[in-house]
Amino acid sequence: MATESGLSVEDGVRELLLLMPRLVGRAKRLPVPAELADLSLAPRHLSLLSYLLFDGPMTITELAGRLKVAPTTTSLMVGDLSRQGLLDRAEDPNDRRRTIVSINDGKRCAVDAWLARGAQAWERALTPLTPAERQLVITTLRAYEQDVAECCAEDS
Image 1 (cartoon, rainbow, N blue to C red):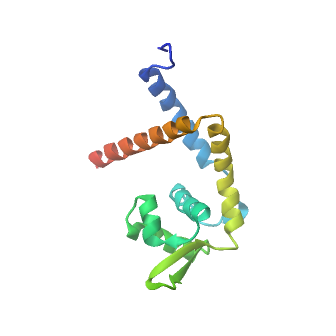
Image 2: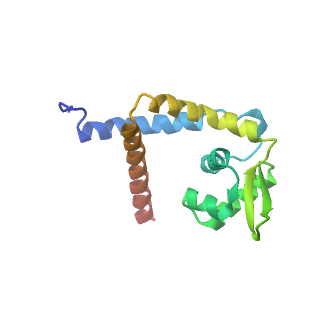
Image 3: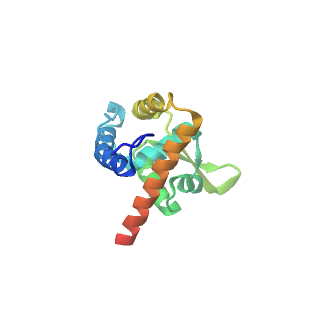
């Protein structure tokens, strides 16, 4: 039932439970550019590629920290995408033990095109909001993701 200032918690939960599968389903159906179609890309690769596209080259450890996964998991993903020619790995000139990861220059436009549709949709959705409202949306989605992750960890 709606309250004077908006939805009740129960109505909000109902709306989000109906919305989330559609949102995820549509995001998964974003067409992969032809240049990337032969690669074994999964949703988990989107975040990795987004960080490299938006923030530039970084080390495996930096990527792992941003992805909130173990460096070995990140290293496996990077190795797989490197073998497919999507990512480049280079020795850090300042510390030869470290590897710098970047998107292959020949694939950068295709990666940008793939991620641009989602970025444009978020930009259109967030533009009418105030900075505080944008932060609230992001904080809420992070809290939901964290709680679901904790529930999944308890069930395993």
